[in-house]
Length: 268
Image (cartoon, helix red, strand yellow):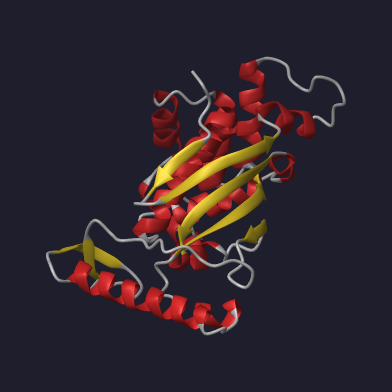
């Protein structure tokens, strides 16, 4: 099967993998400080990567880099660029005439009642799309009119709305990319940027399956507990009960020891 290269996102956007440097083997090679092949068996490599992930030894993951070409609405990109750990280059509205391409949602969501920056559910409003399209058309006509009057492109673009599509290149190491995905795959992230995060996740998972498996286990589907939360668990569990439950789930004795230490502290 051919590896994934480009994934459509939203109505007109996409994520395209331009190139990637390194893979799971590069992670274990860096961890072993080896100039040779850097790998042993897949099982041993998986165990090492899992150890690095759960103990937050992050530098070996920085040996892998991904470069993406992304097409996304401006309001999504403004959220995206809050992650300042990447090299990025976006199409310039100062040099280029921007295309008449706007994101139009297939459904509208209502404002969340408990989350001031979020949304929930769908709103059945047949006029909402017409309002959006009216603004798009008027704004782009004004943009073209300003250009025809000789107004500089860097100023004419001011009239364009945030659902205009833009394009950019994004290069990031795997450690920081995992951080981006942990935040943007979360249920509370805006739906539109989650679609891009899911596309990137598919491309990353295909390139570094062992690292992805550990990321999903310990970060994406895991949780960090506060001191108070740990204290509550300690009052509800005994080490014996917890050990029995962990062994039943298939954890190795060394992993069980680590898990017990997390909750009850190391043995004296």
